[in-house]
Image 1 (tube, helix red, strand yellow):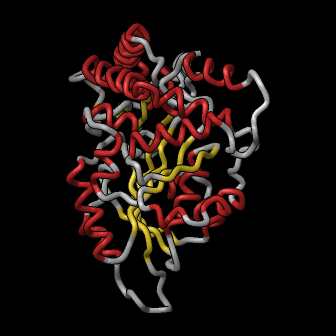
Image 2 (tube, helix red, strand yellow; image 1 turned 90 degrees about the vertical axis):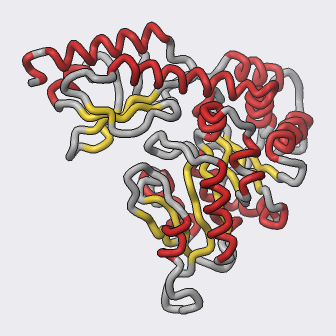
Length: 345
């Protein structure tokens, strides 16, 4: 099955599988006291800066919850976009596990700005009101849009001026860096970010994310929080081997860049097609569009993808590291056919 539903549907890259197989050749110390973890942490320091301290976890929800728990301090609220993954698609885990209130900001493109931070920093010092301690943004956003480095730096300045930390949910940080042709640190470390959840699963890993603290003091005690958050792997080397494979020679850039290119190809193939409206800027590896419900239902018989907004008929078409040009062209042809069919009228 091939689909445009999610980059989570894609398999693991062969280099990742080879790295895991190589790590399986002998016994190794558990819980991260192994050479693979040492090498992966060194790669992450190369990517994010020598001050970076990293902790590998199983999944994105775990990465975000761990980052929030570590960075929130004595405060109890997180400012984020209304469409943010932590607000919409993590089953209440930040609230339930981290015990925080999410102060969401309505946004048309998934991005928030300094003014949104200021607007949520009300009643500071009032014990009856939730106190923000963290700003969390997604890069790329859930709507496929990108923050430029200067936008992130402005958010960091706004957050730090209020004593808040800045977290980047980087589930698709690789796609943003590839699209902007920048190193990972340009979108994080150099822009004033304090902690980042760096995603591996959506760019060819079996299942691994890294929580990277760019302010080392925030990492104090995180090894205990990771255990409490059920995210400490006993056979840690298998997680580390995946990160090592993705960071080696910036393999992530090739894989993410290919996914981005496939989304751009799909958008170009459907530009101007009657009955279809592309709703967001296509900046990363996803296309959002509105088309008639009958056309959507016809397409979903052969191509799995998600309806993003039932009320408007907006759909999401996600490209992956293994999406091929032939699949894009075939899908685009089927979209045009579905729109031209009488049932789509």
